[in-house]
Amino acid sequence: MNTLKKSLFLFFLSLLITSCSQQKKETSKTEVTVGTEKEKSFKGTPLKIAVIGLTHAHVHWVLGNNDAVEIIGIVEPNKDLARRLTKQYGYSMDIVYDSMEALYKNVKPEAVTAFNSIYEHLKVVEFFAPKGVHIMVEKPLAVSWEHAQKMEKIANQHKVHLLTNYETSWYGSNHKAYELSIANQKIGALQRMVFHHGHPGPIEIGCNQEFLDWLTDPKLNGGGAVVDFGCYGANLTTWFLQGQTPEKVTCITRQYKPEKYPKVDDDATIILDYKDLQVIIQASWNWSHSRKDLELYGRTGYVICTDDKKLTVLENEKKGPFNLESTKLPHQINNPFTYLHGVVKENIPINTFDLASLENNLIVVQILEAAKQSAKTGKTIDWNHFFKTTTP
Image (cartoon, rainbow, N blue to C red; front, side, top):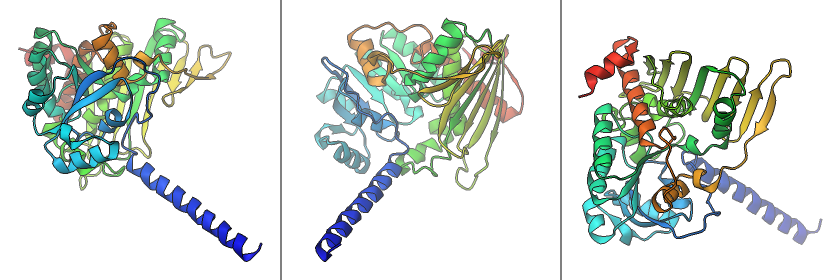
């Protein structure tokens, strides 16, 4: 190799290494974001929305995701955070307002998406529902059962949609599992459900400080891992069981890393006892890796979802297990924002216990409330007795 060729080779090799290194750095920064693949299948008039709060790391989902919505306003009093994110996604600071009141004086959204603390969800509903503006909040619905009841009353009074968004609602594997186990009864009557949700910890995976400030606050988040990841299993369980509520709730929470998370739990195991089956929800900031997977066991077989697409299924022990890969969901149910568009502009129906429905997510908040009480007292909670005494 002559000197010129050698020099060029080394130059391009250097560029390749630098590019890979930069890509790795960028990937690590966005590990905590979800759903960042842009939805390009949407055709139609976008839904005009406002984003309320930028402190939830999942906000990257709406800022960079798809063409079904047009962001006409953002509420975020933290101007440093607002500048960082508007610059990253190409929005003007002219559409950023300090408050919901200031935003509504200038723009009239058809719907809003809440990406602030869970505690602030109630304030979003109190402000926008009376104005006839539909609302989607990031999971879970509310910080407490008290807040959830107030939100339900306001939303119903003003006849607006109040939806809750979960990443797992748009997993093709979960919908295929529902089809196999519930719709088609391929594994017999369900007897046990196991959910594993979480990651190595919000600090460990690099969550931004604005997110950590409320995520690790028991008032603003309602708890630690028990709320952050316990809600996924509660939501999916309520969907699979079409609104059944457990008879008993038992929960053990732990602080394995009190030096990092002194105010909240970082690990929770929730056991839900129903009449004919048991559900185990393992929610943790102590997994070795990020995971959102589930196992369904029936009388004659099982369905295991290992990620958003892949499943292992056993329908008959003699034939043995086989692998499946789910197909992409229809556009109205494969993304929270095409779904929100469909609900508001196209009047697509919301079944009573759909994953995003208010009815489902009221039960989710009840499950979390009972779980926190069980962990606090060290006792199993009797569902009927507990909610008779805590519901006005």
